Image (cartoon, rainbow, N blue to C red; front, side):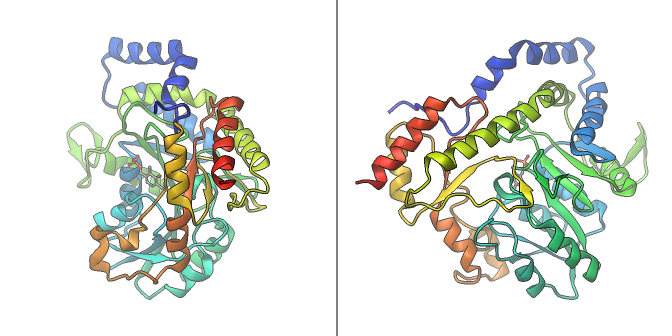
Amino acid sequence: MAQKVPLVDLHAQYRAIQPAIDSAIQSVIERTAFIMGPDVRSFEDEFARFCTSTHAVGVASGTAALELTLRACGIGAGDEVVTSAHTFIATAEAISAVGARPVFADIDARTYNLDAHAVEAVLTPATRAILPVHIYGQPADMDALAVLATRHNLVLIEDAAQAHGATWNGRTVGVLGDAACFSFYPGKNLGAYGDAGAVTTNDAQIAERVSLLRNHGRHSKYLHDIKGYGERMDTLQAAILRAKLEHLADWTDARRRLAARYSELLAGCEVVLPYVDPAADPAWHLYVIRTPARDALLAHLNANGIGAGVHYPVPLHLQPAYADLGYQRGDLPVTETVADTCLSLPLYPEMTDEQQEYVVDAIRSFLDQ
Ligand SMILES: *Cc1c(COP(=O)(O)O)cnc(C)c1O
């Protein structure tokens, strides 16, 4: 069956702002400043303002943002970084890439974010950093994690790849730790037309180091202060992101309205609805429900032309790629239960009320069977 309601609809968004996108792309081509052109700097300034951070550094992807931030904080071989296993694999891959060891702590059963007590239980003398993920756009408990980080002298880095514009106690993600890592993968709340990412921080030294590391360690064209990497943000992506950033607050409002409406329409259904921490105003990258009948409900929705998905079906501690860490099923019980039961419903700013009702009707007809 043809898709009636996709999981995300990037076409609808392009159609709504096509003239601005097309002219942004055209102007980069006219200037031919494809690498580190003026749009990169302008986007960094504008994104820093959006996050209320003093610095933002554009990089090639969210993965690059994580890896360069860890390097900028001096994390490497022999170090342990505590993170969540209920996330996209890039969070852990960045830790591995710098030579450190990912240590997984279990998540909170309601918010699906790192549980600070579980984090505390896995700290060792080798722990150097905590890397919470604001999963689905809901901020992790940054108060509790900041207390731990201060007490144990750890770096606190946000994986904010899904949480552009979310707030925790009224403060925007991006300034809730030592640094924050954003992805502009096309399907993210702010999406480029290819790969892009950014690091935000109020720490001038971290910003300076990430800025050097992303561009071969150089201040000037042929003088390289340190050994770096080729992980710059493309000017074309920066120009597209500038055009889209103007709409991000409105798009986030639309996501919040649709999420609230899902919760209203699904009230009383035999499924677990998203819990919102009273301190959080999520950015609603995904609207995720839970049910033990997840696989059957997913099949039913897909058969009805609804692009529901699962984020993520296999937690990182059980991935073949991380078999070397020696984790077993049962080690992270909450993470495993959430992975077995979570289901992401279609959600994007351009979604119509009718599309949303169609999704809700399909869920209700499944549950009434
Ligand atoms: C998307 C994502 C990343 C990786 O970002 P890329 O831009 O695809 O490299 C990292 N962490 C989380 C939680 C993500 O959702």
